[in-house]
Length: 86
Image (cartoon, rainbow, N blue to C red; front, side, top):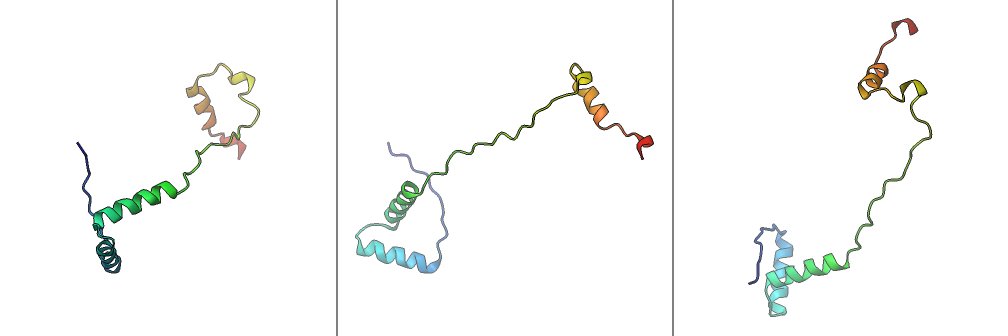
């Protein structure tokens, strides 16, 4: 059993006229020309290479006093406002 998916494509008038003319010339259907054209476009287009995120890590880490601290403690210290530092 052949499964097909229906869709609607809006072609510019000039392109649709050309498709119909070409279908008559080639004794085929507009549908078949569109299918073959899409298959050709997909098979000939280069596939994008897989994206790989570069490692931009920097050396370091937490200061020794915070090695065992919870995330909540680190977050509180990070957003702590020191009014005396102004």
